[in-house]
Image (cartoon, rainbow, N blue to C red; front, side, top):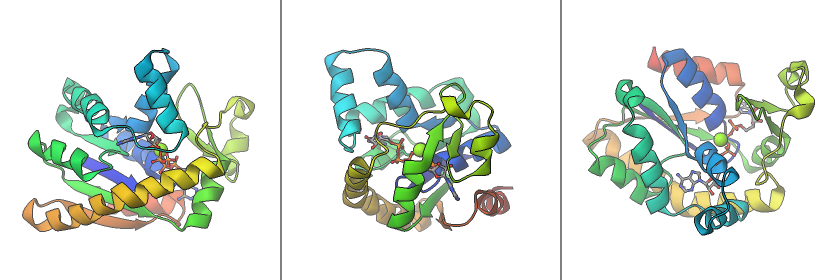
Length: 211
Ligand code: AP5
Ligand code: MG
C-alpha cells in the first residue's frame, strides 16, 4: 500500500502516520522529520539555507525534497509500500512521483479549523529519542515519566505557523485540487478526514478504509 497524508500544520498527519506505519508495517517517510534531522548534523551552506527556510515557515525547494524522497523510496523496505507524511506538498512534487511511475493507492487529507491549528501546534511536544508525538492537552503527555525531557519544535510558534499556513494555501491547496482530478484517471482513492475527531476515532476511520 502506498499512502499519502496531506493537511495543514497540526492537522494530525504525523500522529496518523505513526499509527498507519505500525498497524500495516509500512515505513513512515516524514519529510519534515528528515529535514529537521538533516539540519541538526551539519553547518554547511545547504544546511543553513534549509534551516532558514524551515524557521521562516517556507517550503524547501522541490528539487531538494524530491531527491530526499526518491532516495528513501528506492530502499528495499519500501517495496511493500510506504506512508508519506507531508510529501508531496506541491504539484511539481506530485508530478515527480508520477514520472517515477509510482502508483499511489490512497490519499488522506486532514482538515481542521485555524484556531485548533494554533492550539495544537503550540501544545505539541516530541520525544527526541522515539519521535513520538504528544500534546500538553493529552493525559498521555503527563503519563510519560520523561515528559520533562520532551521537546518543542522551533517552528511551532504563532508567527511561523501563520507563514506555514500561507505556504499551504499557496502550494498545497492547488495540489489537493490536482489529486481530485487524478482520482478517476489514476485510480487514486482520496479521502477527506475530519481532523477535529479524537485520535482514536480517526484511527478507526482509517482502519475501516484500509483493512
Ligand atoms: P512538517 O514537519 O511536515 O510540518 P507541517 O506540515 O507543518 O505539519 P506538522 O508536523 O506541524 O503537523 P502534523 O499534521 O504532523 O500534526 P501532528 O500529528 O504532529 O514540515 C515542517 C517544515 O519542513 C515545512 O514548513 C517545510 O519548511 C519543510 N517541509 C516538509 N516537507 C516538505 C515538502 N514536502 N516540501 C517542501 N518543504 C517541506 O499533530 C499536532 C499536535 O496535535 C500533536 O501535539 C498531536 O498530539 C495533536 N493531535 C493530533 N491529532 C489530534 C486529534 N485528532 N485530536 C487532538 N489532538 C491531536
Ligand atoms: Mg508532522
